[in-house]
Length: 252
Image: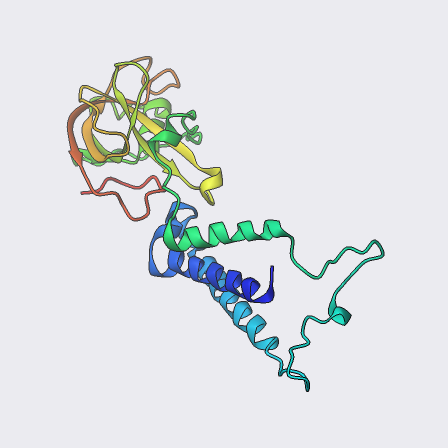
């Protein structure tokens, strides 16, 4: 790979990172919001390196009118006659991710991913504040699951709740899943939290909805035998949130 192409790769990578993290919200498909400044800084650094690399090698031509930048004296040849002055051809593959950030971002994680993994285990919780008097009660999917399976006071029983997520088809004909995918750091550690929805037809996969309903009885409420499930009263389509990879409160 010649020097101009190396410079081009640095510049394209920098522009791609800035495009994904500074000028659009594409970076939120891959990393948490808090990592955005680091991506911006990385994009700026790559651009600076690309410009510096191009500037540092602008040498005047020799007295004979030819550029001696790549003379044999500057070529690195080992004892076996192998030339190590160029980058391996496999480095060309680095252009693919650089170009994809600019022209074709990979699709966001969604129902396809969530349907193929077990739901995220909720953190053990012993104390729960009383539910507010408002009805329906806005909850995250994690909060609802924790209340159903760990709240020994069983305050969630009979209460109308409202949650937001995207549709994930379920195996069999009995309901579908309201889902959220959560990033701890980035897409590599993504986990899903799911609540099974009964009593309402499933919309197409990955459709974002707000569901209102009551807990679907099963097992013993307040223990791990109770299912994280809801009898839906209303299902309303909503816009996908900008930062979709958090378990946030419902969209209104």
